[in-house]
Amino acid sequence: QVMGAYGISEEYDAERLYRDARPFTYLDGTTEIHKLIIGREVLGMGAFV
Image (cartoon, rainbow, N blue to C red; front, side, top):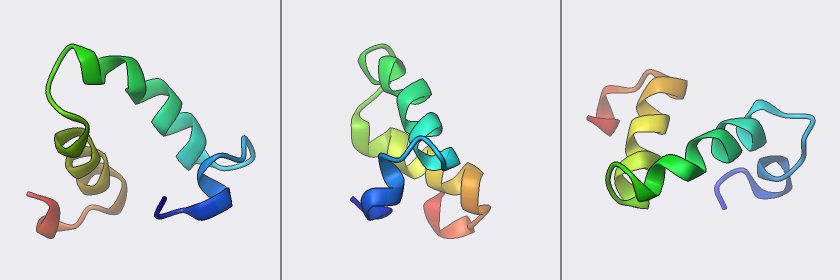
């Protein structure tokens, strides 16, 4: 939702990161937690801690 159309376009890393991380949501935490972790890793921002 944050990336808009870029989030679903295969040209951008955001789509691949989401697609690759999706199966882990069932194994290790909620979707919201994973969004925070991915945001912290991709953006390197401490606000996601």
